Image 1 (cartoon, rainbow, N blue to C red):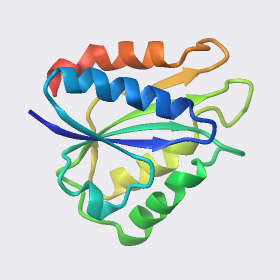
Image 2 (cartoon, rainbow, N blue to C red):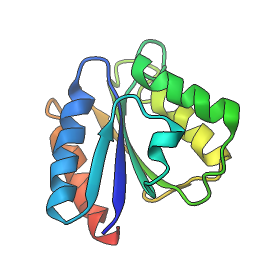
Image 3 (cartoon, rainbow, N blue to C red):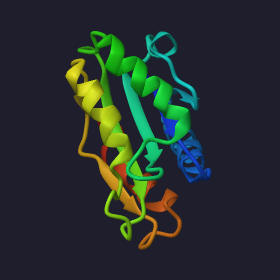
Length: 146
């Protein structure tokens, strides 16, 4: 099966809950799944699919724990042509920067050659107080394509 990395960008912990649930769901399908709160390019080399589960912090920024990784990607422009990724963004639609934080990381990944595996999901905590539910439904829609 596939080696999958889940990159978690979190400030208050909701992204971690989603990542844990995704990891359990994918592991049941036989995939090898690891979760990273402080990813680096070296750590992620063995993984061909990266699932980014991230909230937006402040004025449309990545959470602090993912910012070093984003900077590493932007500064090094690694060859990521073999990488596929999926984005699960969590935000609050009452802010004009709704779900914009992880977009900066996605831009860097795409510039380095990575390709989106599926369409992203943007979860609005105003409408989905339990963000794990829409995230797992989204994953279920495409998990058999892995």
